[in-house]
Amino acid sequence: MNEHLAPIAVLGAGSWGTALAIQFARSGHPTKFWGRDRDALLAMAASRRNTRYLTSAEFPASLVVEPDLAAALAGARDALIAVPSHGFRGMLQQIQPHLTADTRLAWATKGFELDTGLLPHQVAREVLGSNRAVAVLSGPTFAREVGAGLPTAMTVASPDAEFAKALAYGLSSANFRAYTSTDITGVEVGGAVKNVLAVGAGMSDGLGFGANTRVALITRGLVEMMRLGVAAGANRETFMGLAGLGDLVLTCTDDQSRNRRFGLALAAGRTAQQALSEIGQVVEGYTAAKATHTVAERMKVEMPLCEGVYRVLYEGVPARDAVRELMTRPIKSELE
Image (tube, rainbow, N blue to C red):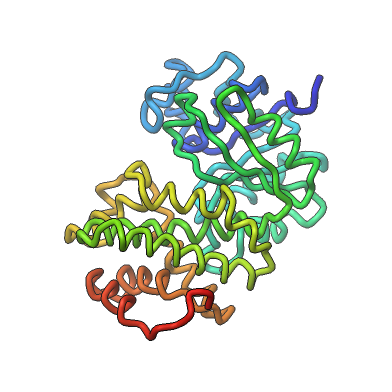
């Protein structure tokens, strides 16, 4: 059997985990699909779709819903985690007893760990050691469009180039193209910071500041993303690709983005907790703003846009005042 058709376990039954499980199965992988809610999984097995998070996408025949975690991982060459960043370490600890020495691990989790400021690959190294092949999937993708089979491209990054290539082949199909990278740090920094900036873009648009402001926020936000990434050891070029500029533009400009919708709700006068409740799913940008603030302070990296979002969310600064402060900062070279 070709390696790219090896069995895979997808762990996490939210919208993104569901979309990725469907895509792997659609591309020919025997795919086992697990989530925490057993009753929800049994309902999915019966209806052959995730009626809560991705109603319109039917499960391919090669996608098997598996309510038992050990059974989901048994025989899997690769495991893919698709859970929010705050649940990532716990998920690793939960699956650790069920992994073989040869199980390769990937994730679609984005964001710094709040308590430690670590990137997902650093958390994985702490929990599982440094000998396992690991990878991250990231880039400009909305779950609904992947589930619908619309043309999509994304990045698979791993220090192990062969693992990245195997995952990319395994994901790719007529309407889905995966590119590879060895810069796992850059791809993960891009995935973390773009969520914060998308909240800012939503606030800006919600306040009626217009297209000029939005594109300035995206462009200067990209500079901040690069600044932090390079300080963390990433390659600058990574941020001009799908997992940097691509994901940033997507989440800042389309209302499918929960982070953007969160910013729009804040601009409309909702409190953060009201906005989170209305959206009803995890909004990574909320915790990412705090984690990015902590990491930027620790690394002494200047990130005024991300800092502005942090101050709105955690210090009670009105969004309009935060934007005004940004526009009245001292004049400097654009390349600084």
